[in-house]
Length: 215
Ligand code: GRF
Image (tube, rainbow, N blue to C red; front, side, top):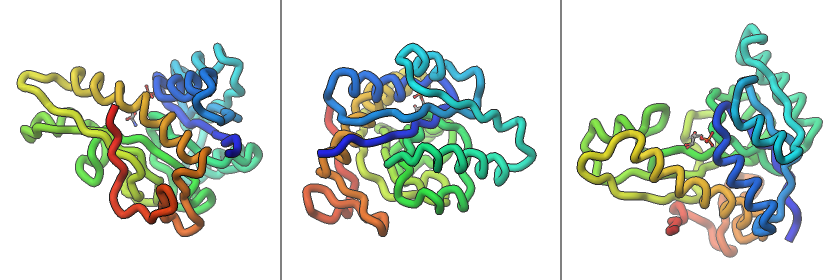
């Protein structure tokens, strides 16, 4: 079992970051957050990181004329940190293909839907508009296509009559905060292995369907 070195990328509240910090501090996740990086100087998650004495870096995307230039700077900073995994936790920017290639199979994202359904934004509203009876959360490997990489872990929850977007978000986030630390722990324990081809192995078996998380 080895200690995972993580870089966590955020844009906002950072409640998933908090869940990862809490798991590390509780001793249930053998990892070290080498850096919390935000594109948004006002992200509340930066305060969470500072409170826990974690190194933070802000790269304000508004100071860069193009996505490529922004991503080149992000890449430079991350290469200096050399994390085992880049953990996207509410990071609200699309990553360029070149960036993804530089850290291929080493970027994880959490998405509030049962991928491949509901890629992109406003997943809760769209699920309600479509009269879905369930929704969920996915943790996946990041590829150059938006919300498209192989899914490691999924959890679903029912949509009840009269539910609002806020209800779904609350239900989903309760799961998210357990799922990210769990996946990272499995990776640190080699229970989950992402190989050099981006294939996922669970307990020595090639994963052809996402693992299902139950709280
Ligand atoms: C999460 O709900 C996640 O699914 C989505 O962005 C949100 C981030 O929340 N990708 P937080 O910043 O971790 O509180």
